Length: 344
Figure 1 (tube, helix red, strand yellow):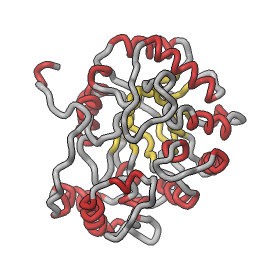
Figure 2 (cartoon, one colour; figure 1 turned 30 degrees about the vertical axis):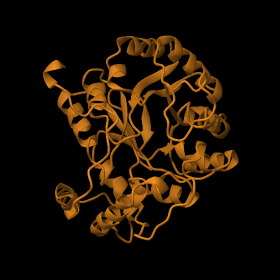
Figure 3 (cartoon, one colour; figure 1 turned 120 degrees about the vertical axis):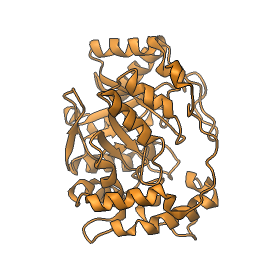
């Protein structure tokens, strides 16, 4: 494993992190708490130190899993978690993909933090992230004032913004870096889904922001692991089962064009991680992990050969031409994808 330090901080994280979305929710199939703890502890043994949870993942379950795995070695790991969804007052069960109400008032932020600290059995959170912030939240001074206060109080080491779940949210990410200079920004970015992540990272670079990036969905919902075929059928309960058929067919064609990245000492999945790690602003990559075999493969990615400049150039050429495929246009974005630049 290799490690990177967030700009202008003393917080160092592993280049590969572990996101608890897969262990605490049922979107990837059922994983018991004991299985989750075993995977988390093996991840630490493999050198992973950054663990990314959210209070809403399993309504507190992801944070409780972290406490069960690491309460005996808290100082050896980095806890990132998220806040903003009010599952406390809006029922315990999420219905389908309908989003729960959000609350970013200072009072609720403090309440949510204390609840997370209790579940995590710790006295501080290393990276506290605004979960699926809209542009109005990025522009809300009260929210960032309370986050600064929590830093001064020692209850959080630093704060950031986590964007998603749609691939959109362009200006939420741009302004989080340019206007708020957040320490951490979590975004979707991968070989097959480069927009708007590339624009967000470039905006932070242009602004000279201190922002470091956590990258989620680095394998494009498993596509870049290289195991799907046109005949792949996802099991009941797997969120990929609801994707349109053209997502699978076009994705498989694109992956075939990327097979040149495979080597005896580097899988396609590891190459997808190395492509992300070629960007110095990327602090950690969060692959979706739901079994021990994936964990071992992905955790070893930093030890594999980095992509050469020729390989990076060839990838750029393929992506610029969209792999020669005429994709169907994406659905409606959830985030702010267009605005009057003169207004900011």
